[in-house]
Length: 212
Length: 212
Image 1 (cartoon, rainbow over the protein chains, first blue to last red):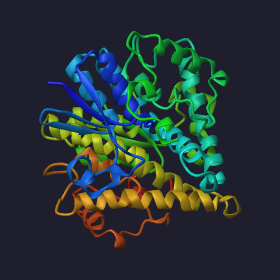
Image 2 (cartoon, rainbow over the protein chains, first blue to last red):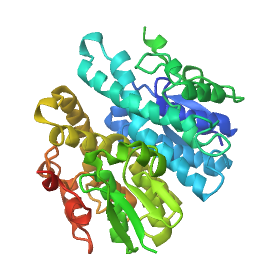
Image 3 (cartoon, chains in turn brown, green):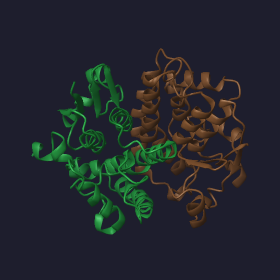
Image 4 (cartoon, rainbow over the protein chains, first blue to last red):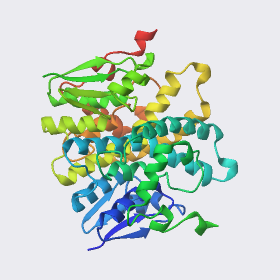
C-alpha cells in the first residue's frame, strides 16, 4: 500500500518527512493540504486528521502519524534507514532532532513565515530581529559541529540531517545566508547530491507561485 | 552508581529531566550549573560538557546525554517507566514531546525568561506579546486534549506529561494562568499529587532567591 503524506510545499516541517520518505525508497505519495487556505486549522481537520492543527500527517493503512520527528522515526523503523547505527547513535540522532525542533527549525520556520508570507504592513520587525539573533546562535552550533564531519551523526545520513536541513534549502529570505556558514553550506551541498534528493518545491505540491 | 544531572532550578527543561529521574525511582543527584553566571556558554562547558551550550546534562558512568527528551528516553529505558505501553503509545509520547519542544516549552521558557530574568528596561514588549499569542494556541491544544483524560497518553504518566509540564509549575508570570485552562489545571494538580513529586525550586538547586 502506498504511504500518503499530507503536506504542502512551503512547510519545512513537511519537507523533513517528505525527504525521509523520498530517500528511504519506500513507496509514498504527497497529498496537498491547503494550509494557506486555512485547512489545517478547521474543526474538521483537527477532529479527523490532527488535533494539533498542523501538517505533515502520514497515513499508512490504519496508522496515522503527525510531527515530522515521529514520521521520520516510523520511516526508519520501516526502512531500516536513518535511525543511527547503534543505541548511542540513536540517542544522538534524537538529540539533534529535539534541538532542531527547539532551536533551529522552529525559529527558522517562524521567521521565514513572518518575513515572506505575511502582508508587508503586518510583519513584526522586533520579533523578526529577535529571532534572527537567536538563530545565529543555532547556526553557530550546527556549523561548529559540522566542521570535519560529513554528517551530523556517525558515518551516514540520519534523521538528524533530514531534520536540521528542513528550512535551509528554501529560496525565501529569512536571514540565513549559506555563504556565511561554510560547514553548513558544504553539508547542504553534500546532502543535495544524494540520489533522489529534491528541493522542497520539487518534492511537495504547492508553492508561493500558486498564489501569485 | 549515582546518576548525576547537571541542572539549575530556573530551567524548565532541566526540570523535565529531574522530574523523570525523581519519579522513576532511579538513584540520582542534582549538580548545580551556574547558568546565570554564564557557565553553560563558556568554551570549557561547550568543549567538555555540551556543545549546544545548554543544560540539563545527564552523566551515568561513561554515558553523557543532553536534551531533556533524550534524558527522559534514557530514564524510561533504564527504569521501564514513562515510555508508553506499546509501539503506538511510544510514538504518541514522542509526538507530544516533540510538540512540546516546538510549540509549548520553547515559547513558555523564552517568554518567562524575557519577562522575569532580563532587566526591566531590556524586555522586548513586542516579542513577549507575540509569543503570548502563540502560547495561547498551544494551551488550547493541550487543554482540549486533556478534556476527559487523566494523562496525555494512555492510562498513566508518560514522558509526554513530564515534558509538557516543564514550565507550567513555575511561580514567575509569563502569561499562563492555570485558572483559565481547567483541564490543564486538573492535570497539573493530579501530577503534583504523585508520591515523590516536587516543585522545580524544591527539586533542583538554585532559584531567583539566590540572586537577590
